[in-house]
Image (cartoon, rainbow, N blue to C red; front, side, top):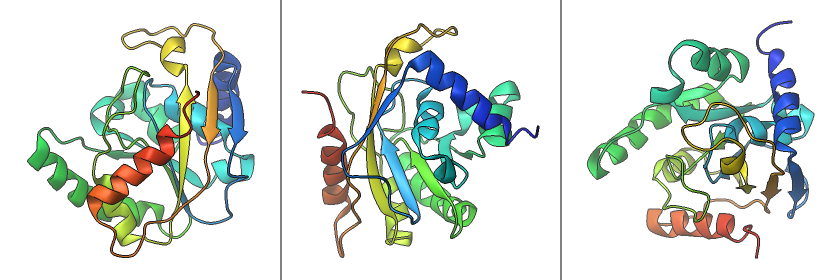
Length: 208
């Protein structure tokens, strides 16, 4: 069994531990290159989200993950060799965030080519699970380069309780991933409007 094929085994374990329940409010994802963008509260997020996709789509979907956390040792093996993740740097401060977002888009576009879809966490860092934070600009610049990408929000519930920040061992708990309807960047849409619209689409999936 190759490391890449081992992803299915890890994903099955993640589904078992998380007890994830999956729902599609906008129907199943379109058969085209897409970006699944989600809230971020746990290091289990991309594994559980990836495992929630239809099997055929998993093989064509790559997570985008923070290089500073996933770059070394077993973490890198899991992210890159098993899940085929694209590791990107995180900027510090407004100016460096903008520069980092622009500088990494060429690499992401090259790595995804015309085949792969992406999993992205636009908040850029883990939150508490209580509210969705502001979106960083990378998603906007990606869509400027590839406006044909279908944008699919995915709201993740309770993974912060299963693997709280600073903890190593997961706690069994029921989680949920809710996928919303797809959309696209609009012609001449401003960065501020686009990021606010995408964040609203994600927040609309929160439980009432």
